[in-house]
Length: 217
Image (cartoon, rainbow, N blue to C red; front, top):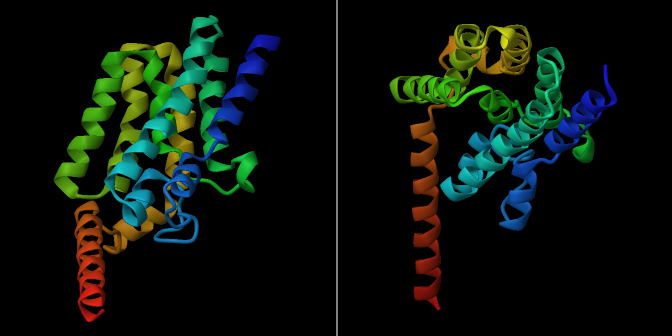
């Protein structure tokens, strides 16, 4: 392994260790996502505790922290195997962040960002797979699981030299979704539409309570 490849792997892990969910919630004065909802510091849980704007911000930053180191490694002509290790390092940083007590999220958005530099055609297929699964089922976690299962086949079709590292990345994502798979099997997973309805209902209740307090004064 060259010094450049090793440096990119370390850089990717450190980028991944920057927990967007925790930082965005702190800046927006929202509850810590590790102590609310599912306890997962990721975009879906931030949607639950903070709303769409905060969740979208987290999603974008999580994608970028996987995309940037892999894109740089790709431009430096690092061999496919070490490029794959760079992608995995970014996801491991998200899952086990050194800056936040090694307790992070599930790495889906970061993995997506890490795969994106391989090609826009692959990125489009991955995005379409996730969105279609989400729209048909209502489960964000199922979209991530299906995308992780299919990703190695997409990569094999477009750029087969990256199939093995992407397959390793997919296995990591599936392992992190073990609890979600069990809840889906038992019918206990929460649909994203339900989260949004609960969030709107809670907001209306808070507004009504504030109005009543003002009237009482």
